[in-house]
Image 1 (cartoon, helix red, strand yellow):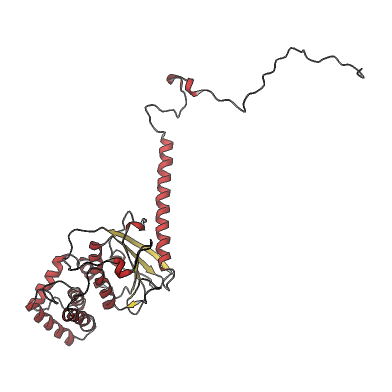
Image 2 (cartoon, rainbow, N blue to C red; image 1 turned 120 degrees about the vertical axis):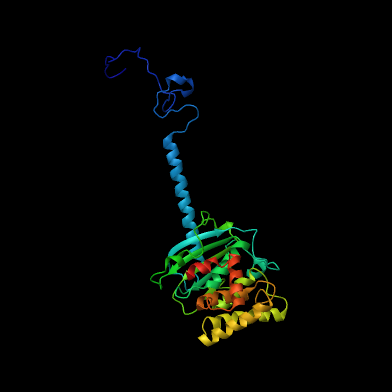
Length: 323
């Protein structure tokens, strides 16, 4: 028996609908086409402009991230060397392979010359003083771009206060795919730096730095074609290269005149300095003759040879810097 009784405050016939789910949404499949009143509802498969803008923004962010990744990978290539404090990335360029190139005999295998490609781009890093631009390397770079897919990049070192605009773009314009380093076979990185002599670094683990424009030119030329198998021809090429850099580029007026006479005599017998084929000797002597200012007063055979070199087209980057 209860202690006390209380009358019910509500009737006993109240019906309560208990929920069967957390929340409900209208059935969009049951709606008719003419009853859709949403301001974002589009017909005929059109995409909302807001969605288009969002996708475009996402694509732009991804592109910038790829560029940032490429820049970081490029810096990581040189961070293990004393030249890690690069200040300004100027330009990158991809130069695709071309079917028209100077006829070199023999083929160069990058795996044989530079070692097996283990996934990272094989990057040749060159330190050069902007007061003495390496014209021969610009010509060789042009030839390499016709043989390989080359990712070319120019940097400015903190030891240099200013660099002329023509040196900034000496390797060509930046390529749209420069962030995708895996698309390239070879990297060519030129760093304008206050150094007494030109330096080249490729692999600090496997090889020491190469110093001197003549020695770096020999290394790069071997990526195009092997040195002549005939010891006499190979010695002749090396002799002309040394003569170009030590007598034409750095010699006195008397020494330059003697070299021009030797050039005139050799070119009277053959179209090129080392015989019937174009070689590194022609590249080195052409650039040094132009730098020394002796081109205008050169003998007839030398004048003809200079014109033949210019007609090849590979010397255009060097000629632009001399203007």
